[in-house]
Length: 104
Image 1 (cartoon, helix red, strand yellow):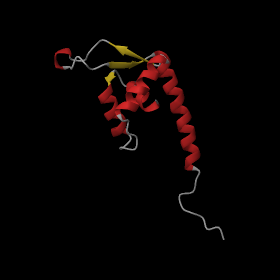
Image 2: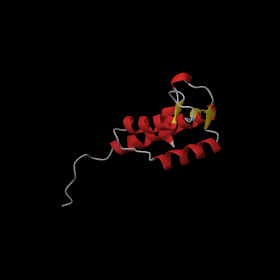
Image 3: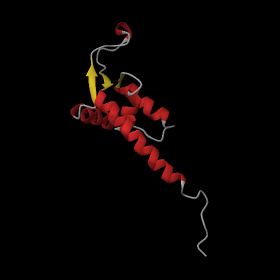
Image 4: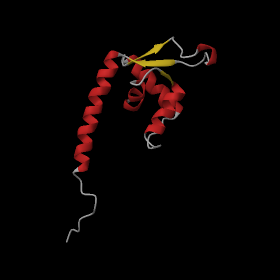
């Protein structure tokens, strides 16, 4: 959910573009198969963290079958809060020594 919300924090986007942006921004570490992506979008819609929008960037160049999504105000606040939580967890991760200690 967070990856999708992070992408949408930069502006409206459609499913395939969200999927690609998450993959590219994580260096391929996070991949969202279409089933996972659309199931998660449905959950985010139900939680009112995102909304479907009718506006299209360039309507004459766009595929009418695409659905565009936008982060809601609540969604932005939740994403921001989750980003802070993830940063705190990452700080803990940096406390772990990068070399293995001998136990003996």
